[in-house]
Length: 169
Image 1 (cartoon, one colour):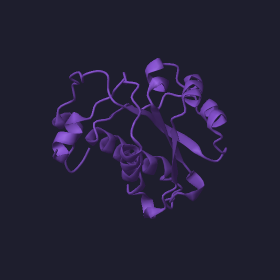
Image 2 (image 1 turned 90 degrees about the vertical axis):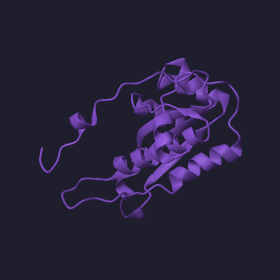
Image 3 (image 1 turned 180 degrees about the vertical axis):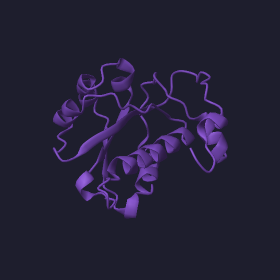
Image 4 (image 1 turned 45 degrees about the vertical axis):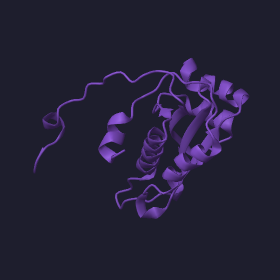
């Protein structure tokens, strides 16, 4: 699959088969996140892998839709702002770095025939409580991970001319 085919194949999956994800496939997906670029290569992130059924069920408290916690794997992307690169004006790269990591993970999952769905609308405090995440760590994004139990539906995108500006705003 070419890169263009891969990025066009990726779609948000909201129904998963209960089949477990083989460890070698999961490791390949996680490795894609490990090698993702981060500012100054500081790698100020962690990915939490949640596979135990009881823990996944507890995650219903952070995002209630069944398709989320019923997937065989939940990946929770965490950033550590205190360890991330900071620009002179104070801007912190932690969340952008984690977004790049998650994008690598999601594309690797797609290539492996697995489905994902980028989730940001969750209860961060409850997530930290359930997963024992320290207060200084930010939960930035999550994705369920598993074999899709649904075919992709067409998704419209704005034309390039509406999204790209040349030379100036």
